[in-house]
Length: 264
Image 1: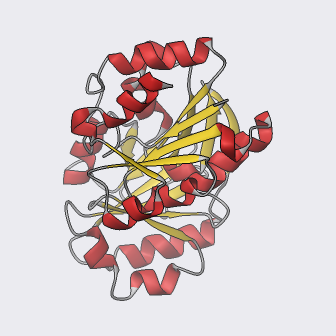
Image 2: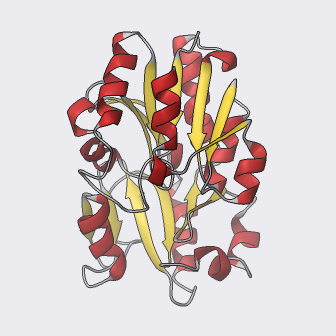
């Protein structure tokens, strides 16, 4: 019997950066019915909780939220799980990220997200696309008075390429680095991540791997796959993600995840 369903959002349920109203309304019906049957549904994303809630507005009180790359888990608005970067590590990441040409930086805290300037592609996309609560503060080292759960490096299509030469080799053994689409490299605490969020839910509610189904499309979703009896990569996934999953379903454009859920 299935007891837990976990799905990534961007590239899996909707296109990258799509906001409120982008999700096929049929998902709301399915999530509600799953909830009525006692099956927990968790959205697991690099997005902040508010952004996920806007996307799932009609059923926002019926789902769980693993947000900021699995650094925090919420039951509706109640925080259940959080992993925080120590400030020295976060500041070191921010300093180094500022040295990467063409890239911008977003710091995600337990209260909201932060960036350097409102006059930036990153700020406009987070507000107008993702629907973020994000504040431009100038210096991300001096002006963020919040516990930091994630630092994200942004480029509109070359985040992997631009962070590869020296940044990732320097930090890969100190924090967990995962690519989230072509735009983002996420830096989270070593004990955080999407797999940690899934494992937390399983332990808290005594759910076995064979009672879990997960869906994803990108590198940061692979760690969830080994924790589930069935793992689905959408057909628009990266090749290594399709290879890691036990099943492949239709792309988000064809509502592949919805079709699987409707059959459960």
